[in-house]
Image 1 (cartoon, protein in one colour):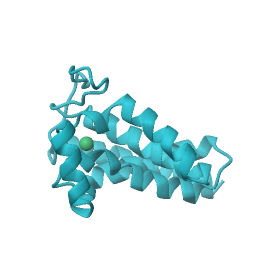
Image 2 (cartoon, helix red, strand yellow):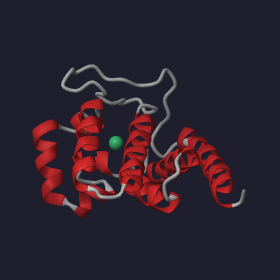
Image 3 (cartoon, rainbow, N blue to C red):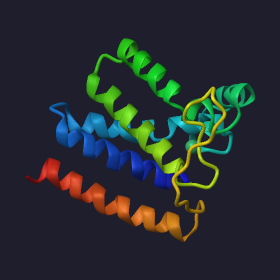
Image 4 (cartoon, rainbow, N blue to C red):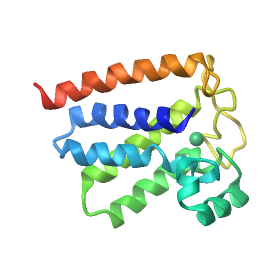
Length: 157
Ligand SMILES: [Zn+2]
């Protein structure tokens, strides 16, 4: 999936979460956008990889691409870390929603993700789409509709 689709996935997931949460939706949304980019820190060509090249290189050489940072273990450790370093719950929840959306979207690609890292098995959906292909375009369109729907539910009702 491209960076734009991941960001839109983070927006949609965080707005969906914000429907159920009493916390400030804007903070959840900001967290969602940032969180949607975090797992690709393992990839030097990604938006976040270009922003933090040294950290990206380190993580890539330690774990490879789409392994540790795309796993339930990473989500659990991040949740623990956010709990201790972030004073605002809404931001932490948004970050996690964005990260979860990223992993789900990557599971829609042929490459899949090592969800249960360090177990080496790759997880992906039975249907997959090609990055930048027609399937991703459809996913992008669907995510756009859901983002508008959830955003409407928060701010206009
Ligand atoms: Zn990824």
